[in-house]
Image 1: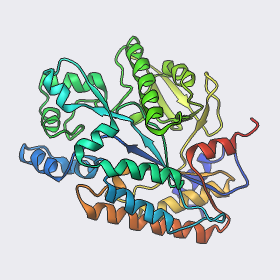
Image 2 (image 1 turned 180 degrees about the horizontal axis):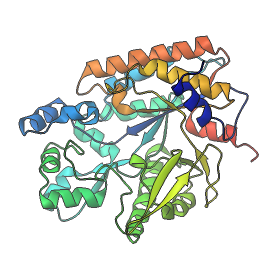
Image 3 (image 1 turned 180 degrees about the vertical axis):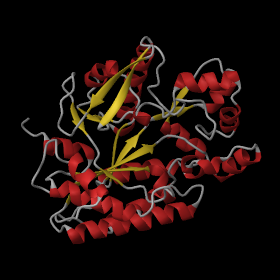
Image 4 (image 1 turned 30 degrees about the vertical axis):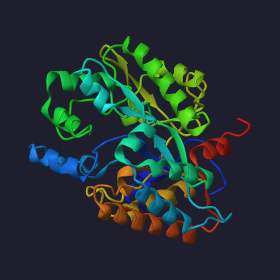
Length: 367
């Protein structure tokens, strides 16, 4: 007898483009973006009465250090698919961050951006960029676009100017997005009015150009930060080279000025600008205390996807594998990742690991 979770998974996979191959792609959000700077920042926020423990992102998430990436790549290398390939983390990433020092210097008069490579240098993580490039060469790590910064420029500046204490305290320790932050602050494409899309369009162009300067190739796939983006920006993304849109099954898209439009998506659907949509159908959040038994739940979702002749598109976040603030968090996440990978290849010997663009190119070849 089917349980409710499996039934829901089967239904979710009943529509969309299929394949006879057993393809597995990991989509892992938030790489490149700042969140909480380090353990000292956690202590500072706690000392100011900010309950960072309410959010695992505030408590554990930070830029990936060289140790984080080395441990991740070692874990990925430890398991191979039928072609001798390791699983690849599609790093859904933000190529820029707020320049905290410059914004302080201008006394919150305007947002200033910097490439995430500059942020790495400020954090003392210069070796991390070499590992990013090593991971790309080894096909263990593959970046796609998640928005320019993982903050709303307008909401961050608004929070600082109005003196919203959680955001001010976070900013004081080079961090963003904590318990009590202003609504929308972690949404790169946040809008209140349709005219806001004019600035966001330029922001997107700049972000995608920065992405190309860092990695020497154009991003072809986009996942909106916090799943917030106006459909009026789709043509801008398409003109900048985005061929694939990573979207949820159901969502209300904000059109600005209090107007919304309901969208339904499935893998293979073509949107109004001709871009192919990819919808994640599996979830793996091993360090989320609110998700019991993340491993078995993910495996059940993979089983359902393969049963319905669909690829397993696994959604996750960097926080599960981040150890700069607490190494035990990284160790716990990677231990479950290795167990997941081993179980996948043992249960499905014919499995093939692919990155996000390989997935799209395979599914939509000739279509």
